[in-house]
Image (cartoon, rainbow, N blue to C red; front, side, top):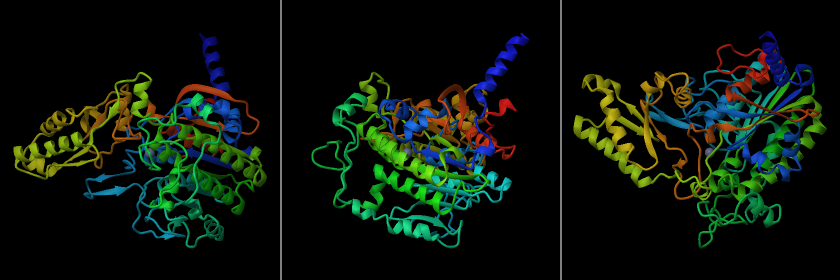
Length: 539
Ligand SMILES: [Zn+2]
């Protein structure tokens, strides 16, 4: 018996030992690629020759890593990656959501007190998020450490960056990368200069073409003209195929965000930050968060098995290669700990699922959904002679508890009315209630994911659960946002120069990523966070 225990522990130590500790790490480069299902790394393995090749070949790869919250989306996902906490109890209940206390819709990083610096766009920052993140823990231990965050999406950059980074930067959809006066009082000169050289308008007549020959795309993905993909570059008739450009009426500054070139801008800016702010130059470890956002819109439009998604990955492979060359020159790859992961996975387009034999999926019919929710409101109004008992927002139901009390209405009655109508819609067969979530057994993975996504006062009283393989996207494209494994499963690679590739198959939660990096840097993290260090078994 003792022998057996010894064997298990030794194995654990061998498997889990972090290859490098603080002394080796001058810079952490944390890359989050939006909507990156793990198969986007594995399916094109034979074709990668650049950055992905290097990452894959030098990775400690945790192949069974999942987000453990129900609504798998960019805001909640990046909050988890940045803080090691589940999003619900911290009040991050989506990208945006209805707040029953404020009686209005809120955005996850909105901040009316802040002003945008360097361009336009919405007023955003970390101000209203009530906890610290990995960058803050590093700075607390080493006040001279630098923390920078850059991404296409504001929420990605802000939620990764934490409460007090040196700077968080994002794209304003008007041709500039910007920040907020929450972080800094004046835009750094290098950011002004970077924006001056961007010239996104020059892409107006550019065409996105395939990198390799068309046969290779057939071999590794599927036909280009696949029904169910979005036809973004609209030409008559419906033809979701390469090449892809911009329509003459399209807003180039907005739509550049759904092209691979957008990722290049973000990576070039990341290189600029490392050089200009001298990240990794001294003994105090720095961290740079990089969020690649175009992947999300590209996969939404064409699906993860499309030629477009494949070509995006091949181009990213080369862009990341350029990024690595720049990092090697400025900081030295041997001094950098890389992390590669994602905010959520995603569903293949339903038409593709059907083709490969998964026939239980589909697209929610918008008209059925609207008439279903209207029928709920109507029945409640007629039955109780009240039009203010239930608020419906994005498949979530919020009850007016004050009125329920006065009118002595049991909320179970409302649950029943809602359930009857909502489950008559194809693709929705379950309504999950808050009571059910809080009474769930520890073994109920699905309800635990809901528990990690609800909040005692701000969470809804009931929420719909889409059936497996269903999406709200209609008539084209696909999405994410469910608690199913295809949406929760993400890659997790800890990458070091000189490290041999190793696959680790035990289950990892994404809340563990931030504390694990803290552990590598030997930086303490708050005891109350949800995650733990993946390597803590060796201590
Ligand atoms: Zn998305």
